Image 1: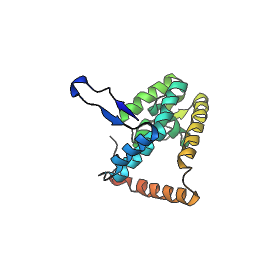
Image 2: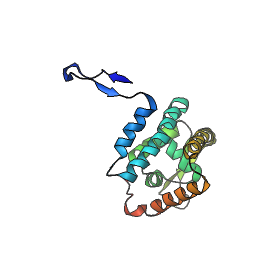
Image 3: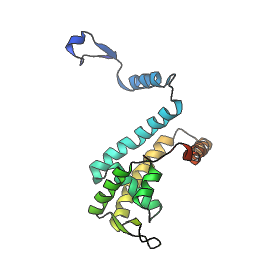
Image 4: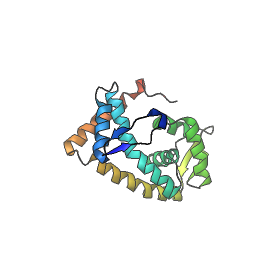
Length: 178
């Protein structure tokens, strides 16, 4: 254990701070106990620790931001999406998606074309380079998800996914674009 002496000198005291994982677990338990947002905070905690390191490494290794990745991911799942549609299904602000579209076009990872069914609408498509980088990055996400879910057995995973799907199916009442 160590004392944290990095406080301002005028405070005149030190704070005890336990070392290592024990301290993190103890602090997390205190934050979770009686939390007025028991579900939302836990979802955010899991999401932050799942995606945070992946995005950091993706930025370093591939020069891609989180909004750029979201676009690649969505377009891999379904081509011919507009930037507006990606914003609507990702919960990301339209401005960050629009900026990321321009960046991905500059990097030649996506192209934009006119929708053949509606000439007023612009849709996005992955390029071969975009598909290649997607495959490299998705492998990391899959591996991290496997690590995260390793504590759950098959039935737990199925139940957890069913519960998440139930929340998502009801998201029309609370998930509004911003």
